Picture (cartoon, helix red, strand yellow):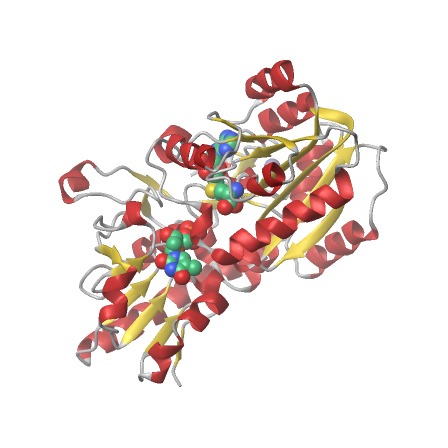
Length: 408
Ligand code: SAH
Ligand code: TMP
Ligand code: ZN
């Protein structure tokens, strides 16, 4: 099927289909199974503006609402990551007398808390009401809204212009990036900065981490695509900083053209991207082949475990796992349940394939033979926490960068 690039309107064609997909964070009760919403997950690489994207995305209101299932504070590592992110912003960019910082997609306030503790004027913009309320409980000034030009206008009329607009794992969620850029342009002071960090295309391709592709991630960015998109709105990519979070991310720092020096890191990153052929369609064809192989290997391992009478449980009902489970067709016949620490997911069933989600305590009570690591991006944190599992003879099953078993 042919469609138009969301950024440059060029006609583009998906390089693969992951098939019918449900809402990645749409955990549900059995009475809702028959009404479940599905769309077709098809990734595309636009050779004109070099933006990786998906062609179909459910209406954002279907994903971000009063029952949004993802809470930033569930990962201790992310909480400390946001502290260092905020410290760095304060140190580098908030030198004016009474600075004002706005976060797009502030969720439960894990990042903004660091500004409020330092008595810095702040505002979180967050459309999902339940997580916005959680942030408010932590004393974070929060506007429950999608970020766009209209929201930016409301913010400036109430609070004035911002010194810094920051974000994490949200820019890639917003289909209308031109609307975001117009909002940024309206809201930022002349020398203000825009900083956001998102899963990085280079890492996704190199690690065959295809589960980064799901409804919320309408884009997977590279330095090249970010530079192209924001250039159209008078912004310049002035620095990039590689991050290890979420399985490999990139922090992008942008300012109005000519207002701040451009770091040599930018050209270095662009050269790296050319070097690993991120700009070529053939790279995505090979990625598709590796996805197909990964699916075959993962299903084979789970089938072997089942045939050997072994119990396999999933570790963490992540949004990423929705792509893996539905693409591979893995259901409750192969995975007994998925353990997750987020109360709102517990007692529900996973989107599409309907595997039960149970509290972490159920896993601790009785370790299975195998644990399938869906939270592979938190591998270090998880492995440390679950060292007893390997000691007791358990096996981890992982699938990034390739399907493998980890035993002691
Ligand atoms: N920044 C947090 C949360 C990431 S999840 C973190 O990194 O942990 C993405 C968040 O962005 C969700 O809370 C979602 O409700 C919010 N969001 C989605 N679309 C948005 C938009 N257009 N404007 C602002 N926030 C948005
Ligand atoms: P995400 O991959 O969509 O960010 O979601 C992370 C999910 O993983 C969240 O529901 C919490 C869960 N989780 C656990 O259950 N145990 C853990 O140790 C970690 C790190 C995450
Ligand atoms: Zn394009």
